[in-house]
Length: 309
Image (cartoon, rainbow, N blue to C red):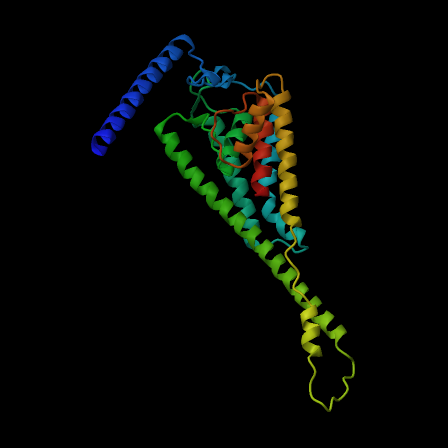
């Protein structure tokens, strides 16, 4: 009897599930037929409005303005190996000067090749072509920060191979830069730790009497009590809070720019989603800059966020 009841319940549940699946499929099919743009009703989301924006083959910015932005962007990266020792009050080493020179060579070499020789394709391009200076800044910022929207890609096989090798070389130079930066941070941490140890030793010396008297009854636990009073300081949350505050400022600026720019076509929620995906170097690419102002702004903000993390 129990076996028959279990079989009947199983058959009933499977029949209901099959009917529900059939009705759901029909409902989805009718929804796709009647509402191709879906949205919150359950259909397939339409592609973003960004794909309908076509970029001009020539930049609207004056050449002087383009090269000014390019020089500032390159300087932000190339001067880091030299600026790191100067912050500590030390002269740059030979290796740091070599890294700075390689950075300049890689960046300006990439600028020349990407704007004159290698052909690229994009959903925003009317035809396959080389990049403008603004587009090159935007593309190289994606490469170096590993954001990788994917809205601009090499069009030919040779270009794809070269860009792949260029990415490896750029990451190699960036890794050397990160190594120098890591050494500076480690040395500062060691100096800070030594400073804490010296402070603890000084505090213990102050707590001990200058001329200890002889105790005929034997040693007292006073020294142990004094040592127990000196507690190791907990790590300060200030660096983490500072990094989060800087990231929040970058994020707010990003949201305000892309939501208020008249030609970007993004609301505040889309700009917020885009800011988190970009500044965290995830870079899904559903929402991307579509104006030259947005590309320049994004190129600089990607670098700032990458250096923050």
